[in-house]
Every structure is written in structure tokens, then in C-alpha cells.
Length: 25
Image 1 (cartoon, rainbow, N blue to C red):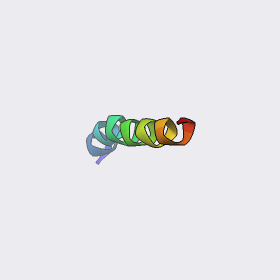
Image 2: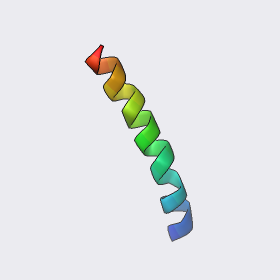
Image 3: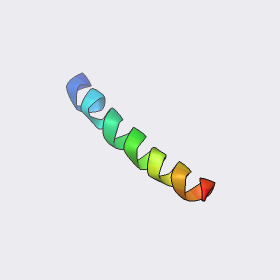
């Protein structure tokens, strides 16, 4: 279902953002 994938994007981006922030530190 495409709606689920689109809804997942913010969560994936958010977790990626946290990982990048941890690496940056």
C-alpha cells in the first residue's frame, strides 16, 4: 500500500536524522 510507505517516510527520515546527529557529535 502506497499510503503506508508515504506515512513511513517521516519516521525513516527522523530516525536517519537522529543517527546522523549521533555521528556528527
